[in-house]
Image (cartoon, rainbow, N blue to C red; front, side, top):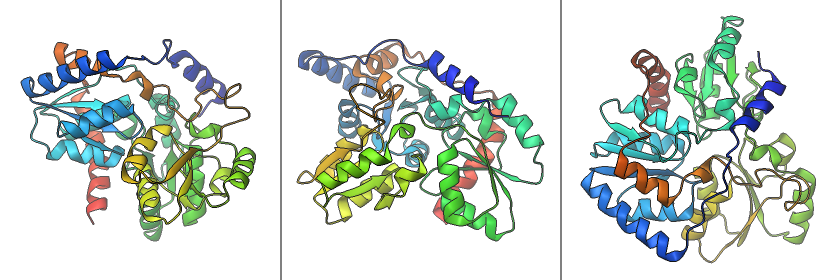
Length: 345
């Protein structure tokens, strides 16, 4: 079963111990040039998440790589001819790439870049939880380890979770959902499905505060509120649009509003501003005074472990390779492939 105290203790134990690396313009250019050279030399491509540093997102785009949410990151790696994939994000993203591309080398700048949702779903505990509910179809969020995916019937991202659960419910399935409590409850409200929910959460989205958000919206009454469904329900209730990172990016482009209050990791602002340079994007407020009481402050601390320096180093040294037990990989591939095939349909 889920243990709240053990979860919080594990997050504390795995919180990055060193501050985010800051580089001056000269150093940034040095590493950019080095990375571009190494990508060609090593037949490698950068696949980066929306939440990593803007310098890395820009470099990925300039070098023929890709910047996306976790679903499109996974698919891009299977289509690109490079023999080496450098996944810039958090560990479950690298594992997903390896599950789908066993013949390729998959590296990450820092293997300690984890995710609170991943940390909050221990494979042994979750396996026991599944055994207690053998009549339920196990659906897990992509933000989980390969070992958790190997226990699942389906894997979903936030962009297709509601559609998949609607489909399964229409077929008479009762659902066991993991690991995010807020995304799970959002899916439950949207679908009316019979769902038992594991109780982990994202420590970034947990901090968004509905009461302070209301006050901010009074100051920007014409701003549209964009919210990721990993946020608390009282924050979601204030949203004009609820969706995955790619869906929020799409909304920021298509909606006529000139201002947006965005309740997800601030890393997405790079792509939003790039697509709509004439629009203004404001970070949704976190618990209390952002300068005093928030911990993540709308930025994943593990995403921030990725930087130009360790990206250059992993390409040069070819360390930090993702290795997955083959039996686990094969089992995890089955629900992951269902996700990809469902998206095609």
